[in-house]
Length: 262
Image (tube, rainbow, N blue to C red; front, side, top):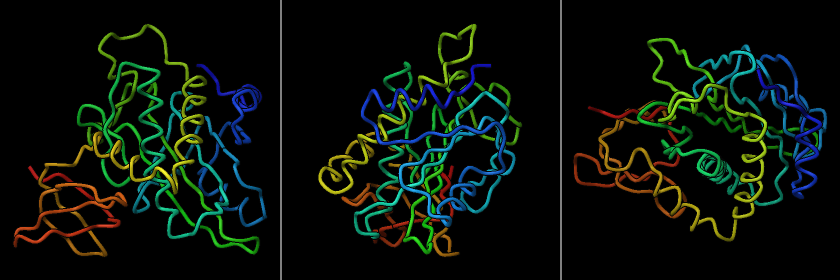
């Protein structure tokens, strides 16, 4: 098992002029929950918490995400952005792009972004993001959790998931180095987050070119209601445009669930 070392990650962040302060724990229920608590206690911005094992991680709609020890990347970011709160959803879009770019630079793989918060490889999920806004006595904070399947090879049969290692065309005899991948992701996150205001619309174009949904017939759950149509584009803000059966086009800013209809 290749471990994630906080001292090495902090040194790499320092050498690359990245703002992140990294902590690593062996086991935790949820990195997002832990950072929510730290935000309530007044923890400063740019804290990154990695966990070697997560026992009660959460995806969207409170789906559990349990990670085996020492195989994948499971971490959360605590930020206190200075940009207006209405722009904060852009961080999730930029983070999805950042993870894609990091993977593309490290490996011969081309992940796709399944709007609004998943990454796919060969029609299977490899990553999920969960963003939460936290109101505290110290101001509003933003917590972004990222889970990435790196070295796991065995998944439950009812789970449509895969990992980076599993999708390599030329199988490796060793596990992928999670430490170097973590550094690459942290570097890309910082770089992409600089586009939160200037350059965001260009970033959406890069997300669009990696979209998993566009052109597919989908079923989306929006505010408890089901919507059927064909995903046709992302608008300048990164919202999903869906051509409905009545000929109109709906702009979806968020959804509880999005599935392809075969």
